[in-house]
Structure formats: structure tokens, C-alpha cells
Image (cartoon, rainbow, N blue to C red; front, side, top):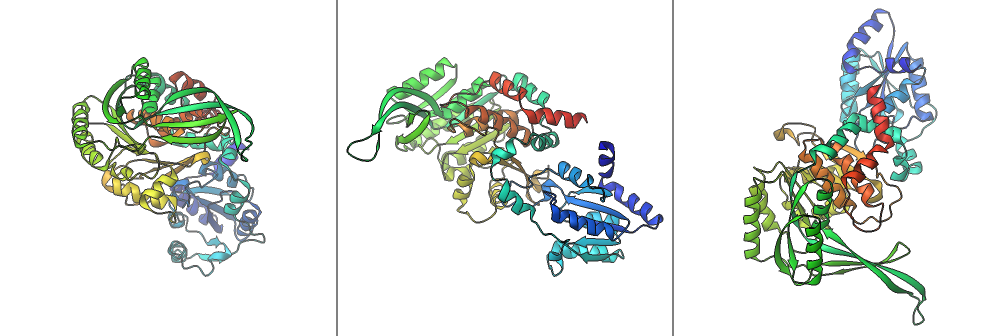
Length: 530
């Protein structure tokens, strides 16, 4: 049964021979095309009708890369599984995956006698459909419009019944198929973590801060007003900002060099002592009156209140020159550089405008991120990877209306950025990259976009997820891995980081342990072996 199912799925290069064979046998060829994200009763009736019109039904489906996605999260079902679903239908004779957004190349090779489209296309003036219709009629075929007797919408079914990324998470078959297609292989990931990460020299440039968690006991509602009364019992301070990124890199086996601004206060000394204990190289510039600190009040692991202490303090011209001189000296020594703007003044647009040209010709991998709608994101020209949230990305360009792929294209084209990971909190992230290998052709067509669901559906503390993702993804990119592999590894690191209270570095051993237990990697291995 399984062999017969896969025998039905053919490549576009086999269509001309198939067409010639069927025509020689005097058979009528019928063709249908669609997304078929979820095969529902409307699809079944539509395809049954099509099969009744001829002797052989060939169904083509739009490949993942060619589907227009408003938020980057479709298709829900990857192309390989969509093809299997169609091939499993007895009345479907052959299935082919279309690389482009229309069926025109399929029609050119197949030359069907009948092309069946839904009733909604009967008066369509869409250029893609008109080109399909012309192709069919030029080959002597006819177009028939019928949607069957039951009408459903895959998009509506997905929206109504698949509402959270957590539900995607448990579908290891779906994610495993994506991993197999992306080349996300368990052995490859282990090799990255155990061998290739070791000794990578990474400069981390940006704001450092202290993350202080104050655990409290709750007494009752206060007597003077309807507010909760709590009593602090314990506090713990964690590295934050660029400091925790440097700590992640060190724990994963790299050799980070932290370039940041500090103050002459106890919080700065505590931070530098912690970094020294972790054997992290530091170049510190005295700029702040006090180290920025985020206070989080917690009761029973639930956060009640967050207080940001510290004002932005832009670096002066002398400090900027010294920092640029340091980066100039480091440019031949480092494998990658990470720029981080948390809004406290270490990075500025003028600094980035001078630093990027200094580093770019010599540093293999340059990545960056911002916290909040920072315009510095638009100064990270020719970065290899940027990892903003969807809100941050939209805010910096002032566009909350266009689709996410359109906004991503706009920013990537403007900055000549090779890769973009847009994070979406509990919904996971979307990976954007050019289709073409040649830099000159990067933005001549739509971007490739891949949706990666969140890999931890029950996070304990979301603080630091983006830092862990950026750290692991940067290391992976510096080892010449493609974006889907880097994005997946970064997402695994983020899943580990949010599984405990407080911003703690993710270690190589933790990453390896988690990778060994991931069901989608086992599914991907089975798919590749099959």
C-alpha cells in the first residue's frame, strides 16, 4: 500500500512522458491544482467530480515556498505530507508538487484535455489564472468550473480549529517532515555542538544590564487599598543584555569577547566578577552612572511587577572612537560579531554606520538584534542575520498593515540582509531568506519563508528566549550552516532557556541532551532513511 502511494507522486520532469503514454492509450487527462493544506470534504467532492470527467486524474499542489502567507505561518501541512494525503485518495491517479505559484509549468508539460477549477474562478481576472487558462486552451484543452457540492476553506478550518503553536508542537510528523526537507539532521547538529562550536571567536557589542529577581511571599490584600501585599524573601541577580549572550556563547563552547559600557557601581562590579568567573574576555568602557537593572517581583513563580532602573546614556565621541579602534583591531581575530541594542546607549546609528564597513570585509558572520522599536536595526547593513520580534520589525518601518513577508522583504532589501528570523512569542518564529544564491539576484523574487513553531509549549520564564536563540543561531551560521538549521538550533536553545526561572546560559550538554529527546529529529531521520 505504501509503495503504491509513493508511486503516484511524480516529478514535473515525468509529466511529458506520462501525457504521451496516456494519449497513446486514448485516455482523457484531467488536471486539478490547488494548495490542499487540509484535505476536507469540499476537496474530496471536487476531486471526485474531476475524476468522473476523464480517465486519469493528475493533481498538482503548490509547493511550500510558493504559497503566499500573510503572517508567514502557512502552509500548516508541509508539501510532502500534502502530496501523500492526495495520493492516498483512490480516485487520484498521480500527484505532482509545483515549484511556482501557479500550475502553468505543469499544464505546459501535461497538456490536459480538461482543467477543473473551482466555481470562484469562473469570472476571475487574476493574471495567474488567465495564464493557466491560455496555456490549457492553446494545447487544445478546456477549462471546467466546479467546486463540488460542499464548500469549505482550509484557511478557515486552520484558523478556527488550530489556534496555537502549541498544537503544532506536538505534531512531530509535520515538524519532522520539515526538518528532513531543511537538512536538520541529528548527527549534523551534534557535530556542530561537540566539534564546530568549540573555540569560535565571537565579539559581542552592546548594552549590558542586570536582571534581578525578587522572590516574595504574599500576605493578603493591603488594608489601605485593594492591592496585593507581599514581603521580599530572596533575590537573585542574573546577567542580562549583551552579558548573557556572551555567557551563552561561552557555555556552548565559543570564546566570546564582550565589548560594552559599564558604571562605577556595585552592580557593574558584580557583573564583571561573574563574567571573570566564566572566563569571558571583556573590554569595558565607563559610560553609565549606574548599570541598568530590571527588577522583577515574583510570587510562587508568577511575575507580579517589572521595574526598569536606569536611563539611556549615549556614549560620547571619545568613547565611540575608542570602541571603533578596538573593533578595527579585532576584525582579523574574530569569526563573528553580534550587535545588541537594548536602548541604553552603547550602540548608536553613527557607531554602527562606521563599524559595519570596518568589520564586514573581514568577519565571516555578523548578526544583530534590538529590544523594542530601535532605529539602530536599520543601521545593521549587510548583516548575515537579524532576529527582531514581529512588533519590533513592523515598528521600525512604521508598517502594521502589510503582510509579514512583505515587511520582511522591504527591510531585507533595504539592508541587504542575508537572513531574517522574526520571532512571534508563543507562536514560534518565521525564517526568511532569499531564493537565489547570487547576491545580485537576492531580491528579484519573493523570499523563502519557513515557519518554525515554538518548541516549548509550557514555558516557565520567557525572559532570555531571544538571547539564547541569537547566540546558538549565530554560532551555527558561523559554521556555514543554512538558515533553517541555524534557526532550528536557536529555537531549541530558546526552549531550554525558558524552561527555568531566571536568565541562565544554555550549556552544550543541555543542548545535546535536549536534541537527543526531540521526536521531530527521530521522524526526520526515519524520513531520510526511507
